[in-house]
Length: 231
Image (cartoon, rainbow, N blue to C red; front, side, top):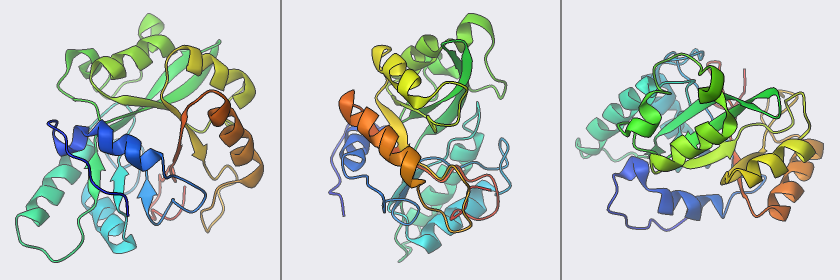
């Protein structure tokens, strides 16, 4: 169990603790201990935020983030429910929840997805990305997205680096140059019914993350009704 650190920021924006968790992530961290990539009905997922939190508790997740596309509405509902549980003297373990979002972006002429964590959703730098629509033009440039999340106090990760028209070998050095914090190293590219990281792609991304000094994260990228699966 990772020891909780103390921060003056709200719990959902505690990036010091988030970094300490990311330093421990490995092949078996997701989906039973941590999960940093999940979707709800607030964007293109099937789970309600309430059902997602109930599953997270039932699974025994220590901490997680909801990363709906271009909105934090699902996060807000989940946070409200967790807050309610914590005030009811509930004996259940209540997992740590960070703010999260997935933003469609452009990098080296191709579409990529950028994940933001621990940011202040009220910060002007990020609010324009949280209206539900994917950004267009200069606003969609990867550097602009990365800088905006950082300005809002968050950490930034490249989602599923081996799912794009350019390979991870090309994209990861590029986002490293732009100041990104991490990459989603542990990911199930072939969508197995029992979620587990794809060995070949994971090892490639892990080596690149180490080479460029980036954090490695994990996430199921759940869009369906089961947090232990991607679809």
